[in-house]
Image (cartoon, rainbow, N blue to C red; front, side, top):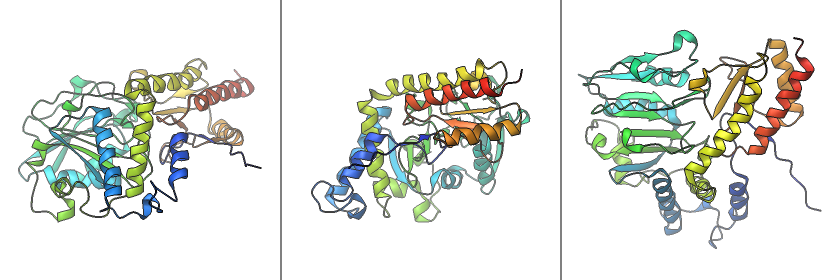
Length: 367
């Protein structure tokens, strides 16, 4: 008798949910990929079979994101954390300053790494109100001589997301999009560089996607270790060293799934519908659930909220776990609750959570 697997309601912040269709295809191809008698993980990264996987993933990314010809797509390792160092290492010249928009813990970490290579400063910050919103565009104060301006497009810990991006003119704009890349269409031309860890919307952990404009590469420092130069990876098509081959294979399949789902506009609509279910449960609770983010800055990827007391939050999380919900704990640095509703989280999971929240309030709201 075939064992029936009960899939969890996975709201983990990362590594996070992957599309079931992708997992099932990977399962089918795990032992014998395209008649090779080997897994993708066993193929040489120099083999024609793997290179086809590699290049197809690049092509799908370019197609879905409408990436122009004056950009390069790289597959790197080290996560967003390595990019925090590589970016100033490559692009911050000794006589220049660089601006960072401070919207949460990840922008703080990026800022801290930039201090090792120059003089970063805050373009704007909402730290004084516990990062409950994204700064207004007119609050951003940067210099036309800056090496670049850096922002984090979505803040997993605080549940805020940029709704519109600034036009920084001749100053290169660099964005960490680790937690909302491919969740909607964006104008790539506004950015000199975008980077993202794969483990939220693109695939398994271990792969970092970098989209970088060619003119920015021309300004890069050359007196660096070879593997830490972006140009090294451009020239080798991200095959300078052994890449995370299985992660790139999975990325390609996730991108194929997005195509089959109707593309980024369809994915964006689904994300809006999923998030609305949970935000409605918060907004209609008469204060039983309190969202952390201001409404104008709310994330469609990470929904953060609190209950009236820590005791009730613990009870909520415990009962949710018993009902099959996973990953609803808020980040350890802020507490509370968080539902991460990335692309692959099904509508049904969000509906179930919304219904659970409404029922939990009925049973526990003493007001």
